[in-house]
Length: 229
Figure 1 (cartoon, one colour):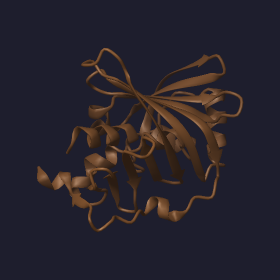
Figure 2: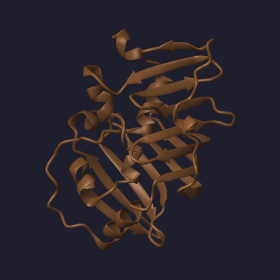
Figure 3: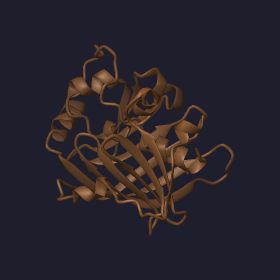
């Protein structure tokens, strides 16, 4: 797998809807309860974003802009760059990472034995859109929360050991007035971080289903990195 595709998959986060673990006993704050209640109204969502990556090997962070589309419960499409340099789509049973300029597609199955780690290594996008308190608590430990200006930042720890080995922590930032998602920050095991700040968000827009089922041009090379190991 290329470094770029690995980074993007990690950027997308852990998309498992069946992570195991007993619900946490910690009592949720009124802010988190209100945020969870607001998520039940979201069926589709779209926003611009700015991604900022900090790496130990670089003295300056890397930034890039893009756009994201989400449809409950687990479909998404991220486009990084204008025009898109990298496109990641959660299709029905697979994750596609598309590089238009390179005419290359990387396929990661989400079914079968090899999919286990990737199902665990995929849903931190969904961490921003839990459907219920039980769903949130079944997948994450809530480590702490803090209100800064007009936002609340919640620090989550994945309960899945496979997810934790890649990403021990994720921060969710939401507006305390309208409970809209303002950002996510992913903390990697190597100490690097990847933050996504969302702007111009639209709740429940009409999204063409083709967004999540892109046609692959015949001249694109399709590879399956997981089968190469």
